[in-house]
Image (cartoon, rainbow, N blue to C red; front, side):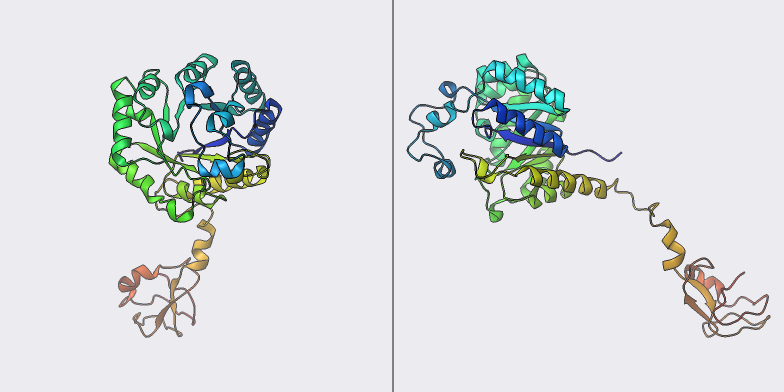
Length: 335
C-alpha cells in the first residue's frame, strides 16, 4: 500500500482577525483537497512581552513601529471562534488543526478536540511547553526551524520522558524566514533528521511557489505544511509568503501525483506497459533464407522486433541447433 502524504494547509493568522475570512480560508482549503487546515492559537499576553519586536518580514508587511504584542493581539481567536472553526471544517470535510503558542491555548485545543498536536519551531527549547504536550498522548508534529540536531534531540527526549512514543512523532524540517531563499532551504537536512533519530519526517515550507514541497515529497516527506491565503496582497505578516487558492490546488495535485509515482519500490513490469513488451523487445529471426537441416549460426540469424518469438536472451542456446524447417528472411525462429 502506497503511504499517503498528510497535507496541512496553514491558514495561520491570514484571517486577519476576521472569522468570515477564516471560514473562506477553510472553504479554499477544502476545495484544494488538503487533509487539514491549520490555524494559530495564542493569547498575546501569554506569548510575548509588550516590548517584543517584530521580525523584519513582519515589519515589511505592516506598521514597522507596531510591537509584536500589538500585532498579534489583533489576531487572537476566542474559544467560541475555535468551536465555530471546527464546526465549519467538519461541514466542509476537512480536519481542523491549530498550533498553540502558550499553555492556556494548548489546553483550549485539548478541550475543543484535536487529534494531533503541532509544535511550532519557536517552542522547540520550551521545556515546560514540551512536557505539557508530550503528556497528552496525541500524535505530535514538531517543526524545527532555526534548530540544530542537538536541539531536536533535546526536544524529542523531553517529549519521550513524559510519555510520547517516538513512533507517534513526525519531525518537520523547516526554515523560518518568510519567504525562505532557495539557497537556505537545505532539503537534504530532512533526510539527515530521519536517519539521525529514526523518525517520520516532513517539511514545513515558507518558500515562494510549490516546487520545494513537491520535491520534499519525492525525497520522503510524509507531512507537508504550507501557508496559504485568499490574496497575497492583503495586509498582515504572512500573506506575502503564502500560496493563493489556485496555487494550493496545484500543489495538492502535484503532491498526489508524485505520491502515486513513488510507488511501492518493487521493480516489475507495470500493468500499463505490458502491451508494449512485444512491440519494443526483439526476437531471434532469420537474417537470410535458411533451409531445413542447416545449423543456426551468427551469420544466418539476427535480432529484430517484434518480441513475441524466442528471446535474444537465449541466443547462445539457439546457435548450433538444426533448423527443423525452411525459413524466409525476417521470419521468427522457432524450436
